[in-house]
Amino acid sequence: MGAMPTYLRVVVTTRCNHRCDFCHREGDPHARGTPAELSLPALEARVLAAVRAGVRKVKLLGGEPFLRRDLPSLIAAVRAACPAVDLSVITAGAVPVEALLRAYDAGLTRVNVSIHGFTAAAHARTTRAPGAFALRQEFLAAALAEATRRGVPLKLNYVFGEDGDRGDLAALLTWSTDKPVVVGLLDDLGADLSWRPLAALVEALRGPHATQVVLVDPASLPTLLRRWPDGLRVEFKHLRLGEVAPYVACPTCPARARCKEGITALRLTHRGLFQPCMDRPDAAFDLGPFLGGAAGGDIGAAFALRAWARSL
Amino acid sequence: MLLGPHGAGKTTLGRLLAERLGCVFAPELGAQLRRDALARDPGQHAMAPQEAFDDEVFRAELDRDVNWAPGVVRVVETWHPGNAAYARERSPAVLARWRLRLAAELRRRRPWVLVQPLRVRHDTALARLTEPGPDPGALVAFFRRVGDEAEALARAWRLRVLPALDTDDLAPDALVERVLRASRSWAPPTGSLGAEALVRKAPR
Image (cartoon, helix red, strand yellow):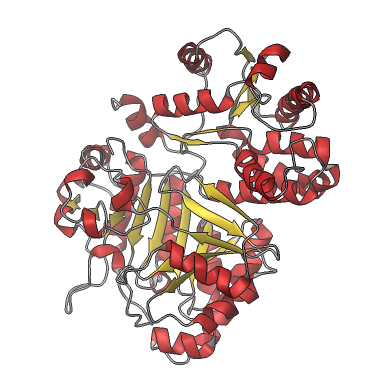
């Protein structure tokens, strides 16, 4: 890439109240018997070093990030270090609404809700967490209200794998139609799908789209946003990291042929390692030795991270 | 943000500027959408009243903004002031519906926005015209009016506006230099002195 990436995805914990098959934890699987997360000071130091190095878009994810009770502290620290940062959370939403409100109070910019099954039956089947559905519905209503109040669309991510439930997807699309919602339709990275079959599926369910635009994201790969005549909006990751090869090392990367990611971002895994992409845990970078002194990171650590990231 | 009438060189200059700055170039969204609209109905040229189209442009531009953290550098063509100028010309009712929402978005992003207006002579614009329409002369005049209104809106929304550049006789590379030179004194807030120090010191 030759430049400092501006997008960081942070696995704040691998703990989760769901057990979905497709959870990838940004390419650093949790090993049984090891800690699920960094301490708050260790996590803050790494994230703040990244912000000091030039990161301007931070996504907190998991596991279920809202299971960390100290998440608002992390959000507040990042917001204080850089008021302009785009700070969001990806959640499955089966948590008390208060967790969302506390995060917004601390300085969260927006939230993406992963819809692991829209209907009660599909939710139970995907998450293998019976009883979580009612909590998710309550959270979804609150997230929608908050997004409406803030004037930004609520992003709902939906993973449709090889054994995807068309009826469940259809229900989500129908529900989303008259709301300020964008559905991000993703394929299961483990399956050999791409955005085209997914787009065809939506057309089969909802008819032909009316307009489409490519939304350029300065921090990541562009996305394709399609709008249907009834107002439904669906976003597709129509480019793959392996095709675009944004990093200097991509052309000779051994994982390039199977690289299906639709996102360019640095990852900070639950063990505190920085990774350039999900497929290359062997290329991870440990910032730990460069972090000294108070929580919040220091300039030396930021320089080290910047030098590593720019060499990618 | 590059503003100006069709044919002023916004897209050419935008691509070159983004290349020089090592950042993303976001071309005019309305142009992307107009290609689709024209494919469906050749009568939907730029001057034709088209409420649904303008509505979609405003919506898509705000969707695109969601991906932009204010501190991240980008070069963007036309953006909200340009979209609003088009809507003011052909579907003012749509602009009236979006005005408050746009004002809120621009207020939020104002400190990080620098506007470079571009100008072009009528004959040059006519020679560069690629948009279909019933009367090329009227179309160029329409685009010039939109360009002027976009600049006026940018000022009305209190965005920082650089002196306009005439693009008729300057080569694209020379224009890039002029824009970079003009923007040199501009220092957007970063919210983090540490980051700013690194950004300024690190060689690119």
